[in-house]
Length: 374
Image (cartoon, rainbow, N blue to C red; front, side):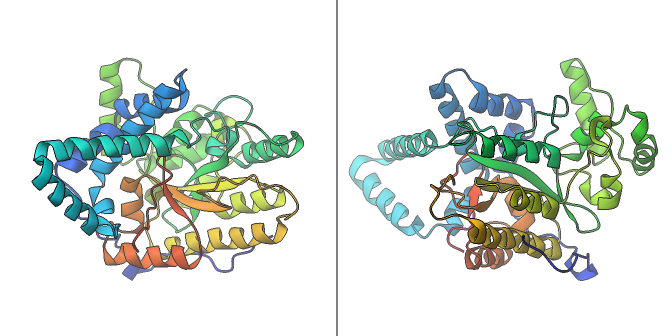
């Protein structure tokens, strides 16, 4: 079993986030595509459309939008940029600019489609196997994780639709790494229960108070705008406004004893239950250097533990792009946490991931390495 010594702390000189220089049109388009109802519809199409060709097409569109949203990742981090620019110059001289752009676009689409066709578009390990905040097990909880691993281990040849175990990580205001998708969903699912009365009142006094779900499209837009103004709405919002002990006091969906776990607890559970699948830890928001260092340390410790307990005589069930454990993220979440692509902060953390042999992959587009060229 892996252990990590020392607790993270927030120092005054590390409160500043990695430098962020991205903006303008690309950021506006990215926000429209990834932080609106359109993104939810596109994502659901990519994972639940009835035909695989439609799912792959949606995944390809998401990847193209990621390319437009975070183009610095491709321009700054790739050692092949000079070769591509040279090829474009030669092709433009030979075939003309318009035809060159058309050929490059077609080549990009075909490359993306080929890579995404091999990406699991159905994965029962998403959010540790939980299904939202209702049903038998709640997403991103230890209870859901234990049930998933137990079922997989007891099923001959394992669960067919389990490609890897994925869950989300945020850093709280006191520097702890917690496993949850977003604060708004947790509070909204838990606010109506008497068991949470005291802690929800405490959070409400701090401005963290979700509202009942809106029904109409206009009401939803107004509600989101109001929640955003309170720093509550959005995947990364609100976590810096509370501490891990406060979050731990919330009984999710009113279920006594079901709490938001820490990343250390989650990875320890994977080891203790004998998980044989790849682990994908999705970075949502890590705000301090102490949190970033702890994140790398926890993943490295789990990797070492997995290698020690792995039976070489048993056929591997790992997902190749992730190996035993990987850090994954969307580029627009990775940059605020580990630095804008190509910046000194990004390179510093890219080197640490490389030294520890921890893969860093883009969500959806798993062929894209977030620390390539670092």
